[in-house]
Length: 509
Image (cartoon, rainbow, N blue to C red):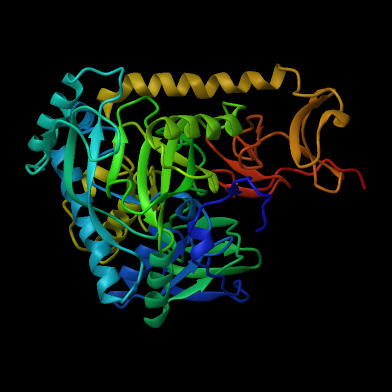
């Protein structure tokens, strides 16, 4: 990908230093013990661990392995919950809080052991993590979290007067022995190990429907995979219309990256307590430089029109604190699925057959949650008890989170008012090349995109999940649904569920 001088490259640096593996599409019907839908870290970890148990496993994906949110992560491997232990403890109790601490800790260890056993060179490194206060929060917030993490069993977490960052962060909590890695190099290694064990990946294969029960099948066009068990690992399930999606809520997040001289920023994972919070880490880049990644500026998916400006605000925040930062070289965005309690939903799909499982609700911790999913579902499919299962059960109803549920549900319902709002533009002539906008034509609302050559493409603006009106995301060149987080590329092709069908073309002829 070429870029003009001084212009940051869209997309993550992972994609510049590792390939996104592509395999042939499914061209005939096949049988397997397990069919996994989705080839990100959740799907491939689950497939790899099941294949080690002697199960025959087939993985299906629309695109290349790691082509979804795995390539958009900043890959913090940590047991420091994004949504705080004192909040989890309040909503789910002490025991679930202990399970969260234990499972995320074990997940980091499992990633390290997989990398070692499969000889995966993925830049895995143990580093400490630091949670520091924003200027708007009192030190009592750290007091509450410190006590909660100790009750959860993380006794080595300690209070420090400041973090190792090159500015005065003020007091912080140090989480020792966390980790970081290159997510796509790791995923490539897991895929190779999976295939060496007889596993099969089919890329470019769009799953149309999932049928559980006796004779379970996953259909992709005229072909299917017949399996004893099915795992849907598509970030947000494509086989569930409503049940799961009212218990999780989509947020867009933004990241910039720029070189900094070696040793100018202390190694570690860093998070502040701002809302939305900032997250920071380094990754090796050149003999003389590391790449500093700074993320944040989150908002509900499809509910902001200033994505490009958010990159700029991140850069302002970073340059005020990292004076050694050189020219911004990358910027990209991703999507986070937040649950009511901050824990993923991993297990049997509610309202489905017992042999259909889902992995969703990453809650900003997709790398460890995805690894937890692989371990947990392997046990469930192999008929072994797993003590983590109740904590992550997708059927759970955290009644103490009813306030959050009502607020988020009201926010979702309010988005249907977009049906009666005017469009972004009155005429297609107002849309510049490479951009999109919503336009009202009579009773219809159209998603109109003008490509680089000037040609105009028109689609129904109605999301194919539950009928919300999508909006243009200039930061990612996607059409985003503000209700449940479905996303479509500029040409209307679905790229993120829960929608599983493209936007309807409205072009004539």
